[in-house]
Structure formats: C-alpha cells, structure tokens
Length: 287
Figure: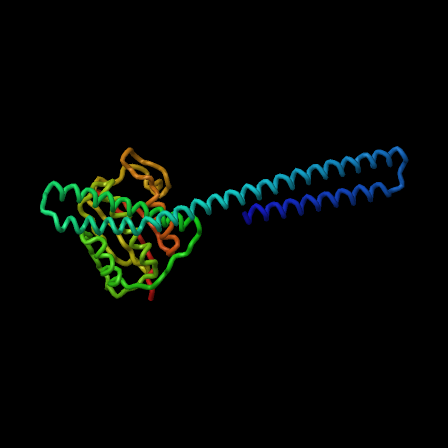
C-alpha cells in the first residue's frame, strides 16, 4: 500500500512537471517574433500539448488510484485471512489440549490391548492436528509481521524445558551448557517439534539425535535422523505449498522454520549426509 502511494505521488509529480515545462517552452517560442503562419502553427502545437498532456495525466492518475485501491483491498484481505488463522488456532488450542489430556488419562487407565492401540492412534492424530494448528498460528503471525518475544537463555534451560516435549530425543552436547543464545523459546520449541515430526512422519525415522556444538561465534543445533532421507533439490525444501512427492507435506513447516530463524538472526541449513536427513540451526552466541 505504501509503495503504491509513493509510486503514484512520484509519477504524478513527474507528469505535472513535464506538463508545466512543455507549456513554458511553447509559450517562450510563441513570444518570439515570427510570421503569422508560424504563429498559428505554434498555437496548434500548444493546444495539442495541452490536450495530450491532460489525457496522459488523467490516465496516469486513474492507473495510480486503481493500483492504490487494489493494494488496499489486498491488504485488507490478507489481514482478514491472518486474523482468521489467529482466531481459529487460538480457539482450538484449548479443546485440542483437553482432548490430548483425556486420551493420555485413558491410555494410563486401560489394560485392553486393542483399545490401547486405538487410543494411541487417536493420540498421534491429535498430535498431528496440534502441530498443524501451531504452523497456522505462526504463519498468521508472519503474515501480519508480528515480532517474536526474544530472550537470552542458556543451553541448560533449553534442554531441561524441551526434554519434556520430546523425551525420546537423543541429546549430544559437546560444549558447556552455560553458553547462552538469544531466541524466542516458544518459537524455537515449535521449530524443533516441527522438524522431529517431519522426520517421523515423512522420513519414517525412529531415532532422532540433537547435536549441539559451536562454530566460531555461533551455537549450532544439528538434528539427525535414521529415516529415508530426502531425494531432490534441497534448495526447494523451504518453498511453501511445493510437494516433492506423493507422501511429502505442504512445505509450510520448513518455510515457517526458515522465517522464524531469520527473525531470530539465525540460519537454516540442510547439510549433506550419507544416511537419514540432517537439519542445522545456527544462532549467535550471547557473551
């Protein structure tokens, strides 16, 4: 919207300047002592410049106003979609969490193997819905340009907090846990959850390791799995709504991870590996 208005102001200013300059030049020439026939010709050219200039400015104004109106409508539509995503995801968080808790209670209470198997399947599907709702929430936040809640946390705090979310994750920390990074804890946990879910669902991995090490002034988080890996161009992995195979996802998850890392001044990479799949997240160390 801002750029369309700026473009309209600039082009109109140039058009008016050209129009005035043309009139001045025509007036200056007409004041020169010349024959009557030449004077009539100059008057005709002057009228032509006035008509053509007026038409040009009218079309320029009409086009600029149309562009501004369409930009404003598109901005309102995008905001409406983003607000819808934010509202829906916020309203559904409570029932999904409640359903998750009830399933876990039933899983602990039941002794029937068949019922337990069905409950575990429901639990996994509910987890998948929760993950997708989280993606929708962050996608809406990114569309609205909302800022993250950045804080300085130690690796020890991150490990202790996230271990409850992913108890099966293998940790391999080769640097002191007292080292600190600047990030949004909730967003970072959502990224890790997104990546581990992708490894399990699309790569069929049953073992995921998180290695934490340091390269110069950056703290690196390397997720490695023993799944089927990825066959294709890794440059296209962060493109949204691009399916690489029949079993692949929408690509929204990795797109969100990339954008969130950029907001945290970090970097997302996909190193080459001889087996499985690897994702590397790099953040600046806080000294």
